[in-house]
Length: 122
Image (cartoon, rainbow, N blue to C red; front, top):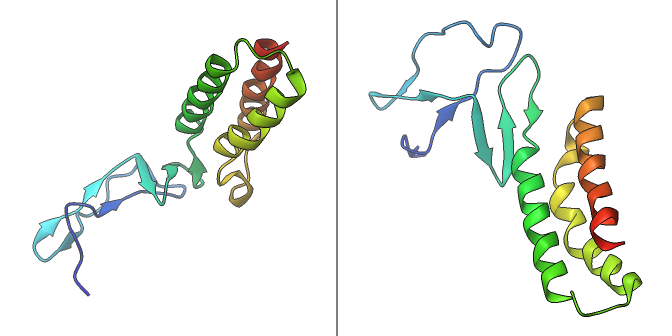
């Protein structure tokens, strides 16, 4: 199997994640140590535990939400608007959340983003 060293990175996770480790190399090329990594559209953060980065998901969510609200600004049926938002935007906000044990603050940030829908629609 051939590895693409340009795309391969090391994400430190565990209690000693901040300690400098020995350099890892594949085919003589050193791998880069990173604090944030994107794998299969899941943004991961280094730390004591493997965590999800919610910033990108919230940005996608609000981008889609504002796009829908811009297109339906003259449409007056709030139930249809909420169904569109729940169908297209909510999966963007909650992508891969079920795979990680989220902290209370991460859950509250996601809930706050979802509450913004009601502020914008109603």
